[in-house]
Length: 343
Image (cartoon, rainbow, N blue to C red; front, side, top):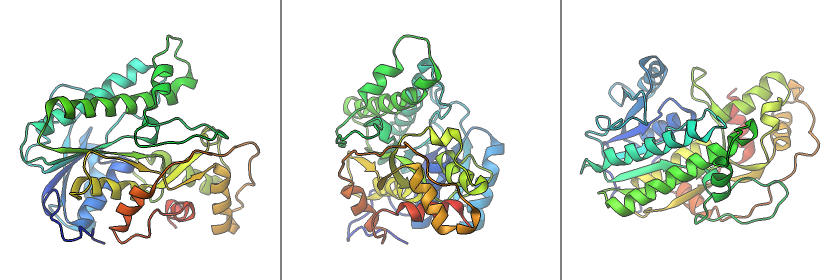
């Protein structure tokens, strides 16, 4: 399925090379997949050659030789980490991040900021690079608050998480989500500051996805949040790790990836923060979808006291971009759960 540019030229020419950092990750692999589908070539960064094998095999089989290449970037926080990787590319999608969920801000936040700024600094060195997209997070705008009515906009920043993340020790486990949220918040803020101060030759956009579900491209990759549905489907039960996630909004990982592509190629998308939120959910909704789709699996009943996400936001800008791909708008939770199971 192509993308309707409505008669305009793409911001980066079809057939050109796009750098995708963290290409073996759940979102990164889908960003590469969607770019390849619409006619771009992809250079993906990996931390070591062993991690690259499955993604090379998958996309060579799907799209043919020469469409994907991988390069090793062992430490995205090292000075000049992406300088060579950016040579000869027309756009950059910086997806790689720290998903360790360490509660110690010093272990996470400086490295995530450095990686983002390194990617932007490298991109700024090459006049060929016209677009830069950062994979931010819903957590850079707001923290989920069960049963509380509040509004989220594309102008919001999660300063609450930053304050909690950098509070004095002890760095207890319950601070892990705040540290992750702060890493996305502060990295994105540093990127917008970089663009304002350095005035590079590229246009920057950010995509802020909430909880990603949907197709997992390979059983050889870490599925991140895509592992939640697979776990329940396999065991019939929601384990304590996933049950601890608060109610929030879901987004299909392929829709998240499509929004990255739109942010890279659509000349009308400039300097935007795109909220990737499809619909609010809690894990009882996931359990209900699985019981409906797979009644023979004996999926457990609902869990008491999960609460609801009552936040309000305008997700129509993202839906409008998805319709340019010929989609109806956002994929539903049930569609994402079905694709996530993959059977």
